Image (cartoon, rainbow, N blue to C red; front, side):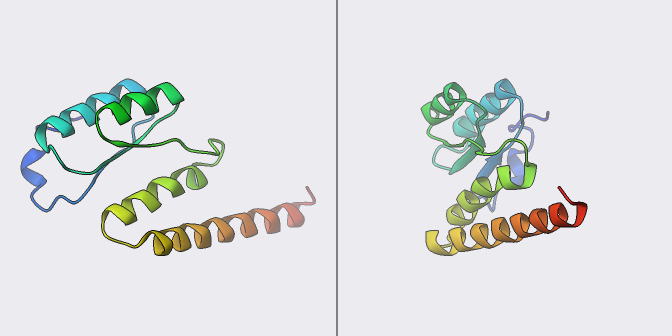
Length: 118
């Protein structure tokens, strides 16, 4: 994983940083580096446990704990909603986008189950 400081020069148009490594130590290291480099930059980071969420929050970042780890797309929807809001999208609009995607995914999943007889 590349260091956040190495890519700092590319952050001129920064509005939000999104940290998504599945490895807790790597995610926390990146959050820490980003916080040092970009003091007030909103940071959203994936947390896999309550403990990692507390650690991320300790660095003034927003932890996102996926609710359904068995489905990668559904798992990332809360992350997407948080990023949309950090970019200026009103909360109700961000949630509407997420709910629409969730609805479409679940509908497709149910149709596939019916087709396969499960």
